[in-house]
Amino acid sequence: MTHRDRFAALAANGRAARRALEAAGPDARSAALRAGAAQIRANACAILGINARETDAARERGQTGAFVDRLSLDGPRLEAIAAGVEAIAGLPDPVGGERRRWTRPNGLEISEISVPIGLIGVIFESRPNVTADAAALCLRAGNGVILRGGSETSGTSAALADAMRAGLAAAGLPQDAIQTPPDADRAWVTAMLSLDEGGCDLVIPRGGKNLVAHVRQHARVPVLSHLDGVCHVYVHAGADPDKALRITLDSKMRRTGVCNAAETLLIDAACAPDLLPVIAGALAGAGCALRGDAAARALVPGMQAATEEDWNTEYLDAIMSVRVVDGMDHALAHIAAHGSGHTDAIVTEDAHAAARFLAGVDSAVALHNAATGFSDGGEFGFGGEIGIATGRLHARGPVGAAQLTTHRYIVRGDGQVRGSWPR
Image (cartoon, rainbow, N blue to C red):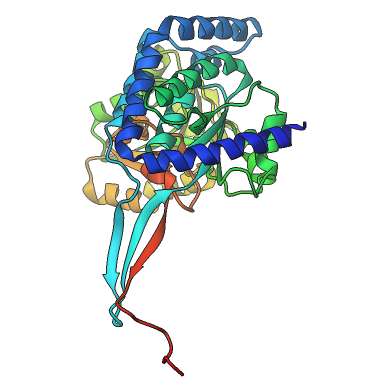
């Protein structure tokens, strides 16, 4: 049997389980999520042991510290995963809600109702926490999910998925609502993308530019893209110096290997002579290498020269590019030319400038006087996220349970017809 045939069987099981999941109702789905969180905690030692072996193997292969950090779990991180699943269990159920209702002149009453998308395929790299986040969010919204994680942490991901499946069983729901392929063979990705009828209703890739490009090129079903995060902090001339320092430092150095970490600092020429040396010193003191344009290097001697490639790079590491800009128009032009439409922030006390930036920057998430790390499903109150959608259709920004629904229409009448009967 080919991988395509075997994946079709997984999909058939997932579809049947999804229908049972929706029919069971919100209380049963919540119970399954709470039970899944309990299973993660109960199996913490085993999960962490598997993860330790996989991260050790990554170090031995010479992977960077930032990459290994993306793979790694410890006690607090695993507890955060379990707590996130519990938070999703407590969210309002997005299924069956009435989005809007209106009455036509002919008396027909039309309602738009939220329903699950169906069966979702999630392809991701590196981060094992995506397993639990994606499974929990799909389950909350009544969807089945097939998860194909990266080979580096396939064991950790399988252990987390098993815990979530055990939660389904404890709640009396079919375990096949959450599935993973039996191994990390890339042929499973090809099989997922090649099926339209009898496959997934939606595919969500979460990873690097090459993965997303491959999925978008080969998928025969809709794709909800999570592209790279070339995120910016723009320190406007009207910035409070202390806020500028703290927001820039946190945006870059809180966790360098996450997609919402800032990769480029833009700073107005009007405030750069006073502020840039202070901010650059703090970044360097935290271990961040800086690459600047000529104006930035004139203010911070010893800074490495930035190349054109730097402005377009998602470093996912302790590296930041720096450009001195001549005001708002220059900052917006730079972001339009080099940004990825993910997350961009302005630091300023000038309300007019903030409003202009928030309206003018074409990113999924725009922030005023807040660090880019707040571009996150948990911070938005979604409990977690599958990713930050940077496309324009269906969803943008953090993708939580509500974004994993579609809708249908219910029409109520009282004998209305389109023609004249009998004829």
